Amino acid sequence: MKFQNIKIKLLLFAVLVSTCTSVHAQINWIKTKSKKSKISFELPEKPNIRNQELNSIKSEIFSHRDAANIFGIVASDFSAIDVDFNHSDPSEYYEQMKEGSLLSSDAILISEQSVVYKKLLGKEIVYTMMLGKHEYTYFKRFFFKDQFIYQFTIGGPTRMKQVLLDKKMLFFNSIQFE
Image (tube, rainbow, N blue to C red):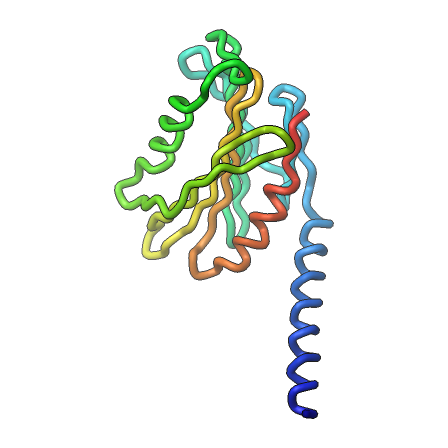
């Protein structure tokens, strides 16, 4: 009986420590807000930001890499080609974006599902690919709102999947559309 109580106390302590670590990690994250792309999100540090234009589509790209994870946010503005995703079916665009994410010869699609942010429907894909000798797992969410396509990505070594899953939840839960 005494041994069982010790096991329960150790389990509770482990849960408490992991919860505190996740909460503490989020406290130190930095909020980034873009008026141009009408979004905000949090990352462990200030992201690198660059702008790109291709075929009249302007994109704002945010990226950050820490010791274990890769974060990427792309907000593409389709207003110059007169597309409004609130009044059109984004399926064709989604398929192209998904295929583009899996272009690497060793990328393997693991799963695909619908996700919701408030009343905004999106898609999430999970895929793996090799980077050097290590397998990485990526979680990528696509949202279509007004004239924008948003892509939110987090990836990391598959062998550190629990750390990746913890950061995934912190990252995706910090996203807000303005």
